[in-house]
Length: 157
Image 1 (cartoon, rainbow, N blue to C red):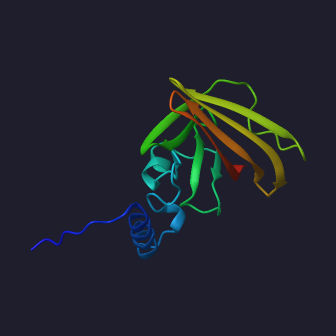
Image 2: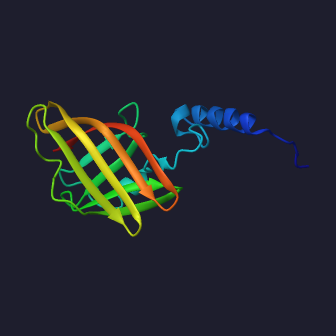
């Protein structure tokens, strides 16, 4: 016999967070854990939909495979995001590539898909053996409004 019960919004968030933690995720990955946020982590399937070719991956919060919110593919020709529950493929609209690894350099990239506009504003935050590290912010804007989040990540091989 099925069990029926009624939950308030806050109980739903707590249950979703508990389920995410039990599945090995984090509270950040739980549905509803960031009320109102349209920007979601890319899934493993999203990230594998196009091959990694010395591209960029930016993360919200802890840098790990579960917090990737922006990833370039095809040597930076396209970018992937997950917004409102759907994968979005973006095309660059500006000419400033994230590949500049100059110390302290500030970089701005603009991407789009239809009416969706994405702006990355990042600063060089260090250099590894085969990657340049960045910190900054990512903004999405469309007919539904805009949202800005802090991001950090790297470009390179």
